[in-house]
Image (cartoon, rainbow, N blue to C red; front, side, top):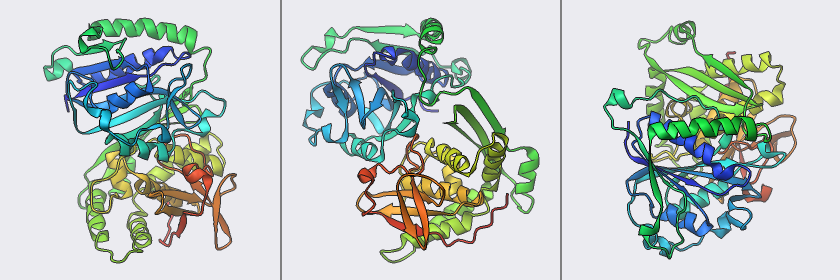
Length: 452
């Protein structure tokens, strides 16, 4: 467990009262997980948010950055009334302003930033921050970014507090509710230290107000009315490991939102799979030639095609239970993969195998797309991969009755499936404004055996 600090940046939102309830809820969870240094800052301008992401404004080392913001019209809004927003073209190319504003501490190496976004429109569940925004943020600020609907935080099950178990002191949060403009002295900041007990009391009050006032009026993107639980049983594990000498393994827990339901699933991953995956990835690195990617992708799918049968089987059972058709089953599977945080693997290929992705619970575009197409193949779908050198991006393709953007191959239409961010529906291509000219389709040649 790390004790590195966390920074929570709260943008303005008239509807959600500056996201205060969510910021406090996140603080409560971080504290329960043993976090001892947390700073909450209310952001009042896009320039302030820009500077804060370049140079840490907290008086302690920060490894985790969280931003609460509304998302609409491909923009992260800092304050809609003041027309303050972030979008790729609004981010300055120069980092010259980085040295002067908040330089009272530094970000820890490999700091990551999670954007908790709220999309306030009728079809919010159909869209979210796109891959271009994510990559522009990473290029400008040097942090790893991921986007999650704010509904994932709502009613999230808190982990038990462990401060006493670990012998940690009381957790504190620094709340800077009136961060000054750039020309104001640092001493002018109004900073209040609250104990965890005080913060918990505040959470109760805010939570009651939220439950009886806000929640009755707003339909939250990603909120849910039902929790769907699943866990591989000892019977499943015995069946999976029947022919293995080493029957050890781990349980991989994944949570996502789909169809106003929170899906909390745990799947067993055998150590034998994960060890083999490491060897197979190393072997793939030796694949020669400029056009090696189709070969690598198909080889990894071939090696792993029988290792995630329990994942596909559990999703199929759920689809049958709720009466989902084929499109809804494909969308449920896509939502599961989309909610896996985005992060680029640090190896020669910048890639991981599907079992490793499940184990680590993160991945980048082609890593997550491989996971999606593998599970979809187990479910009996005809799928493909898309890659683009221009956008340095990868997606999955699904041959299904859908609407939106697709590409043809041998008489079949494969609809684009964005796996990097939650909310994108099958057929929705936002990268490159929906232009397919810079995309190539990779047909999959592995021997598919559904096993479900």
